[in-house]
Image (cartoon, rainbow, N blue to C red; front, side, top):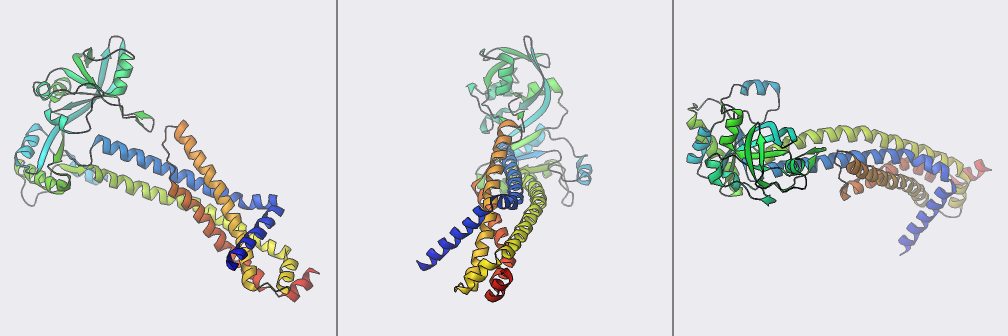
Length: 411
């Protein structure tokens, strides 16, 4: 109880000293405010971008599936050059994986190409046209908010039917019902059977500007010699690694690859894409926060200088308190409390300003931002550490003052 009373008294005196010099205190914490607001804004932007990209990747490619394409994930120009000559992914590859992939429950082939869609006088020039095989309905990324999905029979017989993205349907038809209407894709008539659920935007770009058609119809529109992408789901999510091994063996056998030859195809999961993205954003975040952290160090040096000046100005007060029995520890804690409170005030104001700026960016700009409680706690904790660290030297000087010399000098 005695220690609590002493702590409360130390805080009360520290707040009184800060109130007595309002302008100087404000100028002292200004550096903290700017640094913490910058850190909060940057962290919120990076976190918001990470959350949105993760959501889009998981939505477009479910976590329990993997993809096979011509080159896979490449991280350098040299790697891209080596894989540029890989053969196309074809329906024969899909059949090979289906036949020999014992742990694969479903495999779909798809192709993508931007194309033109028309309905009466409405023309959309760059819509993502996606051609799929009949297994597409076994993947959760395909949904129908209105109408229905294409049936496996319609897909296998390459009927001219189409599932429109939410934004595509909205721009073409407005308030009118799009179901069973006829649109033209690349000049060919297609009947609308459904409208997909809305997915939203990424960096201000709509994720709902697309149309899904049977793969055979897609190949009639854009040609059959373009490389496809295979999307596969294992029989159980926990067996995804074994299913990928099965698919690798099946493709190597089908393509007559020798044991020492590298794979001439790429294979990856949503987690693989996310790992690359996280590595990139982690490096960027470290650089940006490091740069802004320098401002926090400068702010701490300012606090230290102000506290040293405060020790000089209050030499008589410190000498009098020591003469009346105040211990070196009490004097040191008194000065440390002022330093930490000053720094914390700057941190709290800066965190609030940074969070407000991040939320404003998220609302009015196409860049996403997300304010997480842990980032607020981290920002405020950093300022407390800065105040404590840079307040140690002034506090030690104050505690080391001799009461007789202090009273004599001040007189």
